[in-house]
Length: 157
Image (cartoon, rainbow, N blue to C red; front, side):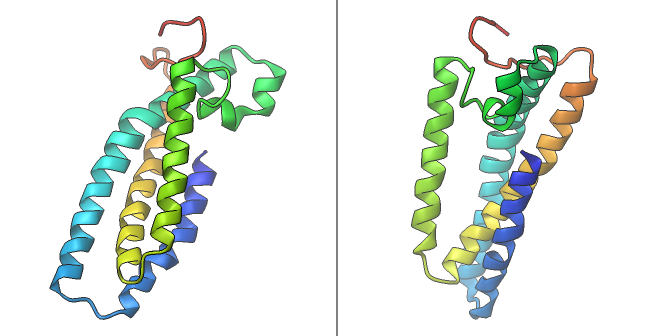
C-alpha cells in the first residue's frame, strides 16, 4: 500500500510543480495555500490518519494472525477492504474508490495553474497518507494491543 501511494506522489509531483510555469497572482497563492491546508486535513488527517491507515494496519494484522492462501495472494485488496470485509466496509471502499476515479478524471481537464494547485494539495495529502500508513503498519504489527477493527465478517472489533 505504501508503495502504491508513494508511486502516486512521485507521479503527481511534476504535475503539481508544472503550475509554477504559469505566473502566479495573489489569488493563485491563496488557492494554493487553501488547497494544501484543506487536503492536509481532509485527506491526510481525516482520510488517512484517522480512517484508512489504522484499518489497513488492523487488516494486515488480522491477515498475519489468520493466514489464508487466497487472502494472502490478494493481500492489497484485502487490506483495502474490497474482499473478506463487512458489507458496509466493501460498499464504502468501492464508493471511495469510484469517487477518487471521478475526481482524477475531472481534475485532469482543469487547466494550469489550477490543476497544479489541486495536485499540490493531493501530493501533500497522499504524502501524509504514506507516513501515517507506515506509522500504523509498524504499530499494528508490533504492539500487543491494537485497538482498531479489521472489519471482517463475523468479528466485532
